Image (cartoon, rainbow, N blue to C red; front, top):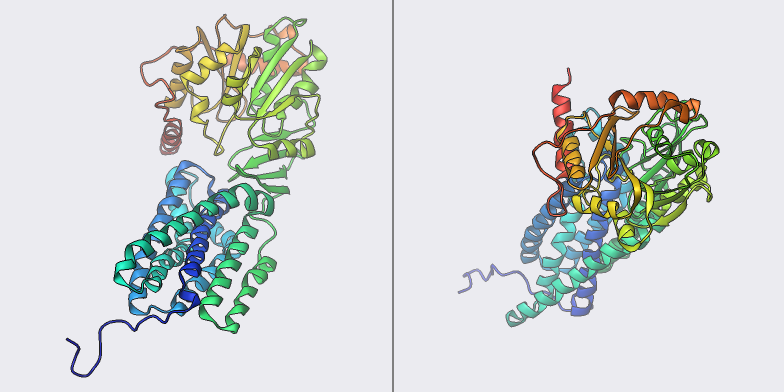
Amino acid sequence: MAPEDGRTDAPPPTKRGWRTSGFFLRVFVFATGAAVMAVEFAAERLLQPFFGNSELVWATLIGLVLLALSLGYAAGGRLADRRPTPSGLGLLALGAGIFVALLPVLASPLLSQVLHGLLATPAGVVIATLAGTSILFMPPVACLGAATPYALRLAVSQPESVGSKAGSLYAWSTAGSIAGTFVPTFYTIPYLGVRTTLWLSAAVLIALGATMLASRFTVLALAVPITAAYAAPPLLKPVPGLIKEVETPYQFAQVYRLSNGDTALSVNDAAGIQSLYTTSRLTGLYYDAYLLLPYFYPATQPLSTLLIGMAAGTIPTLYSRDVDPYRAHVAMTGIELDPDLVALGRQYFHLRPSAAKVIISDGRLYLRRTSHRYNIIIVDAYSQEIYIPFSLATKQFFELCRQHLAAGGTLAINLNATSSTAPLTQAMVRTLHAVFSHVYLAKAPGRYNYFLVASEAPARLPAPSSVPAFLRPVLARIATTWHQPKSTPGIVFTDNRAPVEAMTNQMIINHLLSSP
């Protein structure tokens, strides 16, 4: 029964028109669904230079995006019931679009402030990522989440059609999310950049919002992404001596000049150096230890070497410059997943075609495809700066390496660890012992680098007289810690269970807690 004064509690009926037609609303939710994923992937790229791209960062980002969507769904449904008009839906899209357009402008100064003063620990990364993501990315994602239930309210004119209309709109929204996953990942981010990806998404949202509002003045909001493009800083994260920054399909890479004149490559949050070019013979880092490997063999024996994780080519360049002149040529095949790092190597790190046969591939996938055998296999593949990809640290992977070693062949691994007794170090030793008859460990140049060697035949360090004079200090340093570690009880990494990242995180925390 209606109230006596004639008022009704029901919202006014929605006026039907082309802006609330089924086709236009499907296009609308397709666009907002695509924008959600574009913002999420762009957010990950904006966060990388500051916090890296570890599982902790991804988990935090995905969790907060889902939270923002949930809040948006709930708020959008309530708003639609109170005021089911095209202009209400238009305001959501317009607001989200303006905020998305400003993200590249706000990201660098805001994330720098969030990061300031936080320890570079997993806990600190989580806190910083939570704060940065909440401030920057949750508001536009919440607006975009509110769009679909709002559009559903506008689309429903008869109660009996609710199910089919809801199914259709959510299907189109999901289809948009699929497009928003693949188009930025494979096209706009690698070819146009993360900021252009956001500005294009913002322009589409603003155009849709202006259309829904049916006001020519709202079209002026399209000036926001254009203005933001001019106002945004030219670099995502400036660093001293920066030469070039590149957004690749896999990571954010920066090439910069060190204070001593060397050229370095860092990826994501610049927590470490992934490649280094120096005019001096030795780098002073763990790369120098790898120069000893060819001298494990007779000087006249031609060697075939496989390098998994080539980056910009430090090891091939050192081999061609500092090993080949002193012994039989070492033919090297370099495997690198990211072709942009190889391009940077050729441009800035003196990587020559003669130094290595370069193959763009996943290291493990390459071993499955090839039948070639190598005298030396070097594994120096890292993702997320300090984490060994778990698939390159398991018993099954090392069995694959053993199958591709020639008689008397050697497997060498660079391991980031805080000590020779750290659980991660012991787990790697244990896993290698499950595959190889002989395992050796030594402290490599570099604060947290260890040199792991595994083979079926006994391996012996070369005599000082068999290596060039410039390498003898490196040999002497390796010799002081070279030993055969015992296999202790504990986990062996397998494809089913390899908590490499968790062990790395715990190792860092334990090291920080034990530091004075």
